[in-house]
Image (cartoon, rainbow, N blue to C red; front, side, top):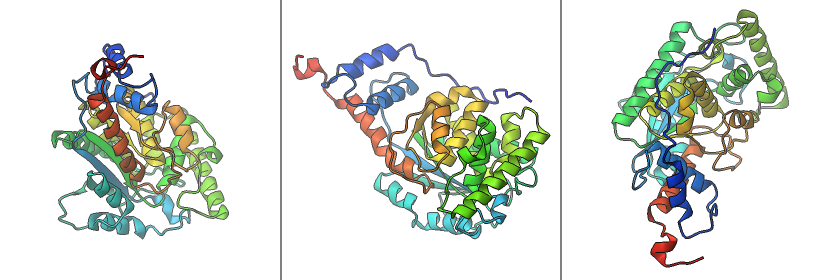
Length: 351
């Protein structure tokens, strides 16, 4: 089955690019001296259609959580119950992503996309958008039904649009789900036709034996799927090996890109969701900013596939959106120099 665009995302208009680049080049610095910040400012100006001033006043971090059937095998150092426990930790403000969001004035929203046992909470930033009570074991059969995959993607799109109507002008993405690096590795192998040895990493810090088991389970998953689909579409791949949180993130990226918002992409798992989004609607790639290069083995392959250069390389492999939260000050710095840095003419500097 072939892919087809499921949402109409307006491509970024590149007509004003030379004028924007000239504005950047006229700042009091040698051309290119601010490195990736200059590329970031150019991207933001194109996304916002060449505004007089760039603004990131209301960033939001959306952390999507779900459980995975593959976690019934010992592919993680943590038991599956930790997914729900970490959701409660997010809501009580105790996780790393909470700390980084507070430090950088980022609103944090937590989405239950399908953890096994639902959380009962009236927290204003908690969203219950459950596709199911965890996926099935992808090594034995499809992770989700066709209806669940479509439902998760559509719920994500609606949520992405909602974040934009609430006034958020930078949408950052994070995730939580024991076993979700296994899902992301399988998805990447299928999307890029890579062997599992190239996409499986240490995840939460598993032993060599656990990593071998994880690799073997993903190889079994790939064999099963390739026997069932000669040329699987992106939606079929998502159904067979995805997670509810990965599907909802991909949908939310599409919904927010449709509204013309920049998307701040976290590490390995979020980047795989971004790769899925670009396969479903290629135009959304223009709206993506890649926060950091993860220490997870497969992330470099995702970045290469998306022709992305990450802003940070800190050896992070926690997830949660921590890398994206740390990159928000860089996005704001790009806006600041674009808006307020003097030009050679205004400063009376001649070179």
